[in-house]
Length: 102
Image (cartoon, rainbow, N blue to C red):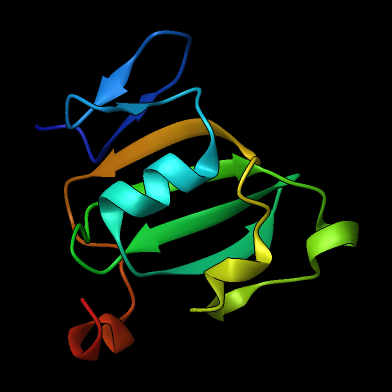
C-alpha cells in the first residue's frame, strides 16, 4: 500500500530545485503561489492552490501573527519566518476555495 504522506525536513534539502526546505518562508511562497493557512502545534500550516498535495509548516509565533483558520491572508506571516517541514500528501489537501485562486 502506498504511503499517505511524506515529511521532508532538514538542512540542505531542496524542493523544485530552488526552494530550501530550511529556508525563509518568502522563498517558498514565491515559488508555490497562493495558499491557505491554519495555525496549530506551534507553527503555521500552509497548503497551496497550484500544488494541492503540498503542505508547508512554518515556525512563527501565533501570538505575533494571530490565529489562522484556513485564511488566504498569507501576508501576515513574516517573510523571514523559517520553513520547518514540507509534507507531501497522496491526496490533495488544499481547500475547495483554491479552485478560484491558483
